[in-house]
Image (tube, rainbow, N blue to C red; front, side):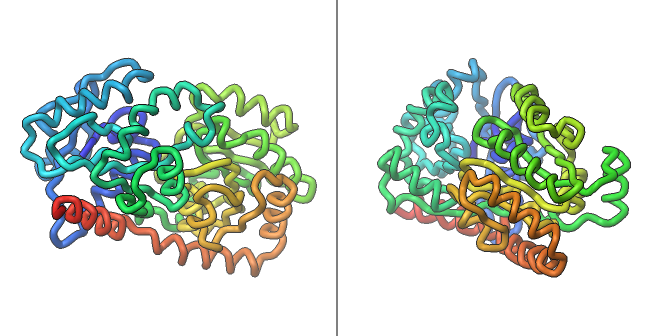
Length: 368
């Protein structure tokens, strides 16, 4: 299995959470697959490497980020040469151009191809990987929405695509009152707040989020908290919030630990998700698992992921989203019903289930 998403910056992104969750799910199986990790040559091995989860003998050389996806097609092929493995699972593209091993590829999203104007260099870097998908022995997508995109953009045979929803780590449960108090004291949060999570690149639409919050504030004294490393988008995020008049009513707190994230989810009045497109969309599920009402736009995978437990409004309609948030804030019984429904729905997404179906996919490929 390509273990590089467990190293470096990817380890704290959704891709790292996916691989970490899948490996945890394998450990719950009665007859789990034996996994070794294909790692980067220039980064420290991840914490997941143990006596039971060993690194593969060869490592992958690191090249310039814009060239890595192209170089991987040859570098991975070379690293797999001579391997005694039965199968290779590519987690984030990373498909070899040729391999004597059967190859399974997980596709999380094809956002650079769905929204090419926003991600031109990423799209160019991923073109070869996209073309190789049709040659994989099996393709796993994390949602029906991503499955449709794979068929549309890569012409992969639908019969070789399996949809396997992601799971949620069991740590995402409502935080204690003491944990929430400590978090509020740590961050100086003394008012009710709406929560948004993620890196607000163009797809996450920070201007739309600011418009939603500005509308909600007409009826409620509430602030906005954005958690997540904003990287090169930090200036754009704070600038949009200032232009919307939210400079004194918003907090951009950067990357947070899992414990703080759980406390944030639990303490938030409402979780707000303004993304224009998601391959899966884990944050709304994490929020619901922590007992927090979520409001999302109706696009991409979010309809199938929310399952009716989140409040869903027409895509891009700031007024509709603000109205939905106001309804949640004003109707206490309805808010409690949504909390309960959200927790029940989120509980159906487990990494054990994802691991079971993934392992069955391996066996099906090896049985051909």
